[in-house]
Image (cartoon, rainbow, N blue to C red; front, side, top):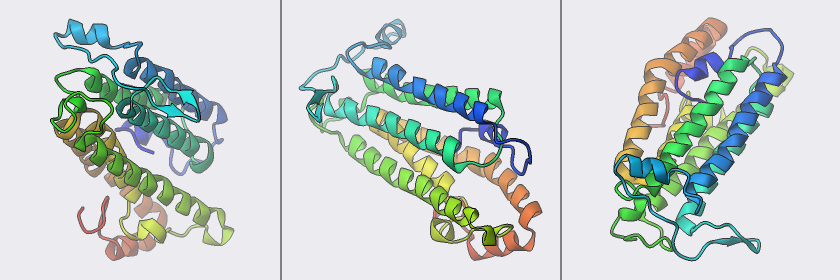
Amino acid sequence: MSSLKHENKLIQRGSSSSPTPFSRSVFVFFRALDLPLQYSIISSRALAAPLIRELGGAAIPPTGRPLYLLGTNTGLSPQRAILFGMAIGSVVKQSHWAMSISRDPMPTGASAAVGVFNAFSNAINMILFTNAATSALAYPSVDGDETKLSVPTLVGLGMYALGMVLEWGSEMQRLRFKKDPINKGRVYSGGLFGLARHINYGGYVLWRGGFALAAAGWTWGAIVAGFHIWNFVSSSIPELDEYCSNRYNEQWAQYKRAVPYKLFPFIL
């Protein structure tokens, strides 16, 4: 789980202090607040419509037949339901990471800040989707028809799914490795981490970029993915590499030689 440079403050790597259950609960609380916020923006409540109009834009009202799930009216068209589902997935994944995967202490202030940052990131996607000039609904393949899925939405959905598998799956594989006492003090280089040293970060880039792409098209998707790649390559990865080099010494050096790719296999 990663969010700008806050990620480096959220996790106190190598600390022997308490596991900070209160701070983790604060993080999960702020992530849970994300869902009613995103629904209010994307649904007929149109929370962001006044802001869009104030900035000179035109808000797109929900149209088309709403999607039913298990006999329940979601109040959302297929396009909007996909975006809201992506928001749900991000909350579930990151909450699971905080409560079940991460073992390092989390400061309370940073937990709240990262929770708010993720809610803000999701909200920007939703606002751009509901703004006529930036929405994925403006693409010719759908031309405003919310019962159809635009090409950016379909590609973004694929990126989101793959990214979640890479981030969540790799972190679960590493967690199982670390739980075995025989592996204490050893670098985990198997599973998905055998493809790239920070493939969980690569997965984060993919699902964040896919979410943005599905909401507001190619340009916004590229901006979001590119920004997170820059942040990881320039900040998070060098700091984590330094920590791992100090902790694992030659083990980490051998791992870097065996797996030269940082985020994505055969690319970067």
